[in-house]
Length: 304
Image 1 (cartoon, helix red, strand yellow):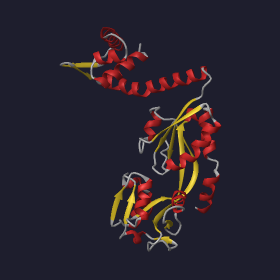
Image 2: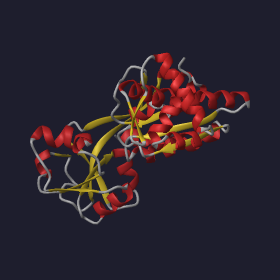
Image 3: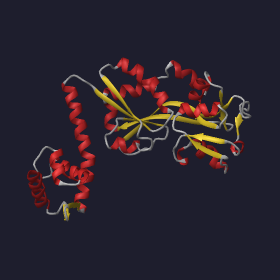
Image 4: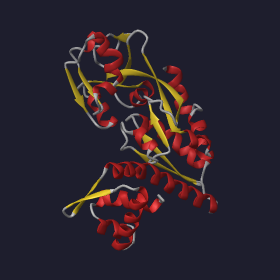
């Protein structure tokens, strides 16, 4: 009945657009895959494709098989890789997805000592999953997701590993630099520098400005933290960042962190993984290590 090769054929035909191209990608003859799929259609009692000229269009059954292929084939590939690593005495690669910009600096403090402690594990950090990390976990593209905003789904587990406070970062000569805390209305005449992400994913909007019905004079999106802080240091605007990160930059730049609101904006960094992978030794070790406050982070945490 349904076999792995059938799923691979459906996936490759959809990706490459033809039986000929799929056959080349799978190192098979076109007649072989055509025969295999005709036999499957006979067994299932339904068509997988309909011909439209030279093109093949997936039927409803074919669309369902494609969804299964996109979900199952990555799992099988990962299983084969891990079994091969076990057979060769290796532990493999820990693929980490990033779902927040400033978390990268935090992650660097974890990865270096982790690699020293686990020399037989490689770490690959993927930053392309800015807000698609859940899908990447389910799609077996990554093994761990670093995020401040976990979405709890069946089959996934999120563990809080680091507490921090979101603060406003201003030039040390700015009028807000000396206040005990910033009120929302005090940002109505400011240029707010943010990462290029939707407003509904920015805490300074969702937890501070929007509840008060306030918008800044202007918002400016900048991709990198270094340039963002350079802009703040030049008096070109203000930014919202984790306190620990702001204090690191304040040690070498003319910027200072200021609390957002009387009680501040508390946040956490979470590590998320598939439930089944939480017992993999080097995944479990990374999570445990990330929950231990390293000296460089401990001071920042106490000041927050």
